[in-house]
Image 1: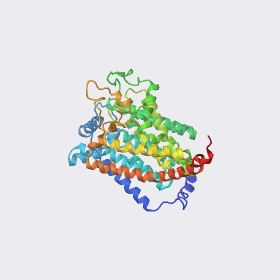
Image 2 (image 1 turned 45 degrees about the horizontal axis):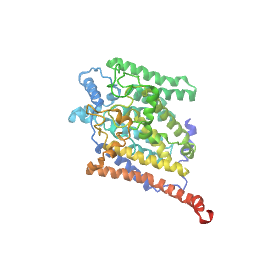
Image 3 (image 1 turned 180 degrees about the vertical axis):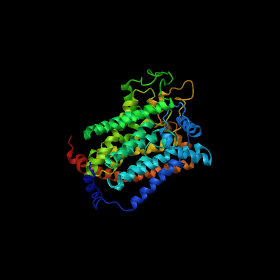
Image 4 (image 1 turned 60 degrees about the vertical axis):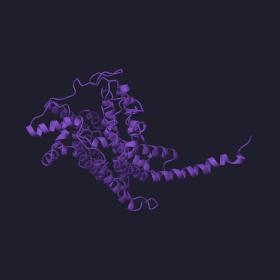
Length: 459
């Protein structure tokens, strides 16, 4: 969409007087957003763990000795954390600064999204989107560690918004390319986005970004002499375990990625499956670009599903939830934010939205508190079977804290954090519950009550 067609839309962003919210609500939402960011910093142990230690070792070798090691992980994202590495070394140790890298990247990326969407959609929708992303998603473990997914998510998703907004599209594609190169498998998702834009504009040059990304991945792998050749897991009771590379049956991989209780996107990114067409239509002309952003975001995540489905480690190892698909929290949060503000939705749609909101807030709290809770049935003993945590509801990251009743072990600070989640749930859910209450009252008066009247019944 051209700038000339977008400009009039920005003039109509204010809601009608009957729907206009009091000014103090924006202050409350801003405070909740800031408090949520603070909770991500102080509400969990921020550390460099797992494959983050390999990335830190690669960066330390490069900055300290000027050479690359043979790590299987990309050096692109870690290069951007070099200032924090230097700052941490000056103060204490490189890790002291590096561990906050993903928090910085996420905060900067979220701020960029807010600025890019400002003037395109109502401010209340932007704040709801931000609050859900921070407090009601599986974000916490990934921003608290030094993994690659946060940098990739923000690079690609912010880049897509820049491309759609029509201003400095080259910068948007550059950000998306850098994000994808940081996690090579995601080049497939970027490829689908590039194909979608090529089809829309009928311009073959829009295939250039994915070609550049693929070339950079190859050059970078050759430079560090890394890669995933021969990478495989241990053999266990599962029929396709122990095989290397892209050997998992695609059919079962897609089913597992979407529906397995321990990693299924349906359970961990429920907002992503909410229909939003009517909610977007209610925004008028401003909803056209937002719908395109949402569509391209979903196309990118769909590409990740296709590329990870045959990968032997589609479940992403010992992690909380489906971390390979962290980018899905943004379309999920946007869809839920749209549905929460859709006043014309029917009773059934509102009940589904309420259920997704409650589940999303639980996901945010659970991932913050218990992302390092590993059941002995899955890990740590000769009798452990990892697949129990990927496929069974009782041992899934989502529900095991209830099965083992971890609330008995919460600290005072964690109870305060839980109270924050309750406030967020109340703030976002109260208007929806009121609408549901009104719809139930109407349904009772117009449909159920007449049918239950004594005169309507005969023997």
